[in-house]
Image 1 (cartoon, protein in one colour):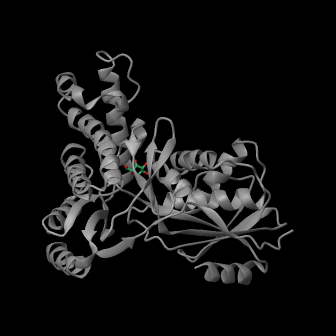
Image 2: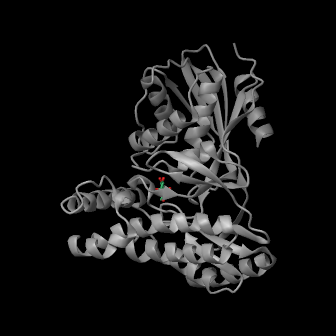
Image 3: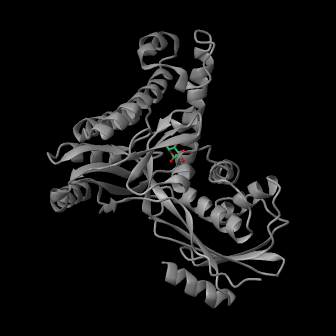
Length: 388
Ligand code: GLA
């Protein structure tokens, strides 16, 4: 991809660019907890987004997206959200940088990627982090990784309309090879946990469905959590988010919360607990327990938090029934995308056959299988810019 993007950039803009790469992410466990200041356990993967950039003296920016085979030109004075367009990710990051006091000059950019879009590997966060890394490196801005992460999150809120948490851009920026990040979304700090799975491996099954209303349903879940916190404040005045409720208080809060809110709060509270236990299990090499926690996470996301769908439930149940799968769960925001599976790698071929046959029979869709390796976070991978 680096060669390809270099070639396209040189053809279009007749100069050698700087190229930044930012990876997509998986999440081992800890779903829909980040926006309640909870715990998550993501890792960067090898697939990601490449952004080539070079200065121009045109007074306007020229962009080209390889995936969409589409050009876009805009002036730096006219940055505003463009409904549903990929340029939002460039404009969103630019507007954050401007707000922070930077004044980027006009540039040319080519964007390309190796992340399957819509699979739930967070191509959008990778895109924002790659764009941020490319722009700040080109103009030599001193911006910390953490600031880039916060800009990416804000950009997603303001330019894509999704009130996401910090997990995805954080994993893309801070990922570490062969490690997952035990990330505390209250302090926005993490611990690198080495992941040694022996002859087991992580495989994603892409359901290839993405049900509509995903974004609005996502935002609604955030609001439901906030409603619970407001109600619970009568009994627990010191709480700020559901992060502050301990699992031992579940029985107590069931009596306080309305029936429709309790299961959602229960998911967040129990999922935080599962994340801590999962990190301990992995540190001890107890893969079986980690797998059990993955299964419980799926159950909780599906039944209590209601962010799964028939396809994901089917894929998780089928995988969980196979003797060489230690755990399987939906991953990411939900309503489609992938399941994450912890598999004894010797049985990968059988797994693919079993899942493909049954899923195709049930839904008429051939799923994709993506083997993942845990990788490093964003960086500049080519800095030979001959720009002026
Ligand atoms: C999406 C969001 C994240 C997180 C997950 C669910 O990926 O971008 O912030 O909330 O959903 O865990």
